[in-house]
Length: 336
Image 1: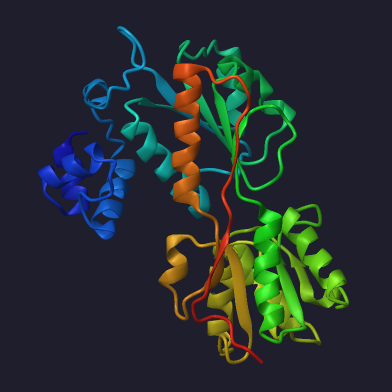
Image 2 (image 1 turned 135 degrees about the vertical axis):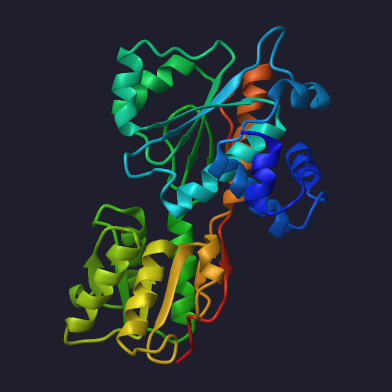
């Protein structure tokens, strides 16, 4: 693939693509154009001339060596087909290119055993970005990179490693507090199983607020649009209807919104909906989805910068970088 292929896919000139890829100051093009260019880079699989970019930035990995940064999705379902991870890995890839490194292999959980047993070995200056929940089964691959690993996570980590975190518990607290302040006391939950941090935080908020946990308001489901749609249908069959629905992520919420629309239930007049993530589609649906933003762009950029610093300078202590979530108010929540 060439710059011309990327330009045609993005609907811009070759020179525009070149400026977007080469620039790290955010002033080379509008946000809309930059998003189209980086989307085209991902779709075409284009890999820029890493050595030339590294020389321009003074960040070449080493004499005669172009280092690569790989990505590992720490659960089999955490893949680039998931909208949250699709956007996150896009920002990670952008920063890898800006830092003058090659885009290395992309692993998911079921690749680990095959890669290690098949003799995969990273270069001595290669790094790894781990996204998702870590588990012991991934350690054979992660250990190959030594200390050249950085984690991007939504949960507290209890290992001595560089990581960038946005607290999922705090994000849930923000969402539930907004609903509560808007007068809602009958709040449903749609999301993953009991052990999921967002469900735990939902239940804890209800208890602190003196609200009863009602099983009729809880539907555990797969956290995607189909799961959200099915969960909303299940919720509507029950005897009691909530005034608001807290969805564990935006993709699930989009499915919920679609179901409510098809059933003739108006959002937010009949029921309010709120979620977490702030993926790009959250601003495109009608009504716009009120959500708690996870700062994916900043998390991806800081993770790669931290990893590059580890590779190039070998900082002594593990770094922990916290990125706060923020409420984004759109049109899907109405005060009572």
